[in-house]
Image 1 (cartoon, rainbow, N blue to C red):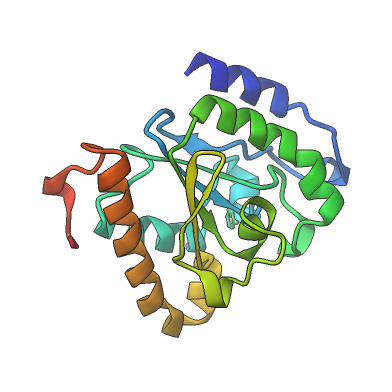
Image 2 (cartoon, rainbow, N blue to C red):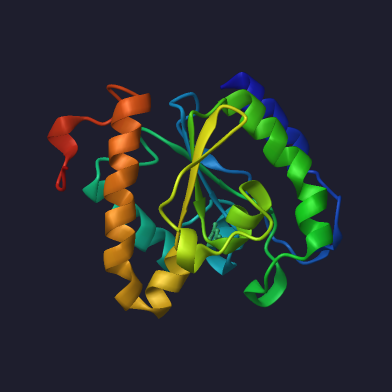
Length: 198
Ligand code: URA
């Protein structure tokens, strides 16, 4: 999509915050634009920084595997990006000023992507996009309607790598997300691709 590519080209030269000094690559986002479904993580990790692609490390592999169970893949039916486009050193949380300085890029992306559903991956994006005091442990999997978009959050896949006992709750959330996608984005999920249906 030309509009998104134009934003990406500008974003690649961003010097809006201190993360520009330590990044190897700007990780803009990837996937299929215009499907109505967007996943938003926190910020690139080491492998993402080295490759310029979001969620390609261990957490991303887990995420891809889980999403494939409900018929979703970034090659076919959603777009994925992060709150901050450059890696925070040693994978620390992005600082408020880094989140603030990167937000206009996300806003531009979302303007073009025009999602019907946004899934926040983890606390950082849920607090930035849903509610400042969002409690991921209590509220994951619940839905809010904001500016005409259905929004929810699930545990960050890194948290699921650290604590596999949280995975069953996430599968319940994913099943819910699958239902919402079928409702709001009819035809997006190919029934033949399903390994897990509700
Ligand atoms: N964690 C994130 O939040 N985003 C990535 O792209 C990779 C790991």
